[in-house]
Length: 51
Image 1 (tube, one colour):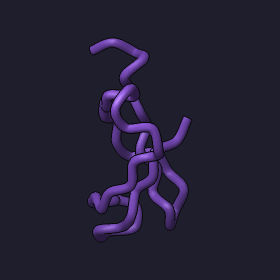
Image 2 (cartoon, rainbow, N blue to C red):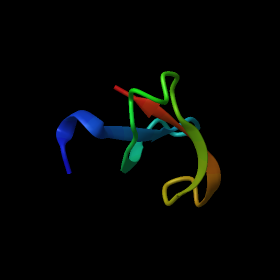
Image 3 (cartoon, rainbow, N blue to C red):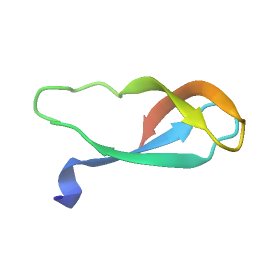
Image 4 (cartoon, helix red, strand yellow):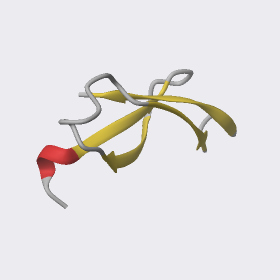
């Protein structure tokens, strides 16, 4: 996987990076947000893309 397409997903509650994903930055300009499971919060929370 190329590094320029990689993004980090950070939990908005505990501020820990739990997931790495990829996206097409030419098509999706704004930051990605999705609900994922956080093992530190022990539940499904909103995760936001970070730099």
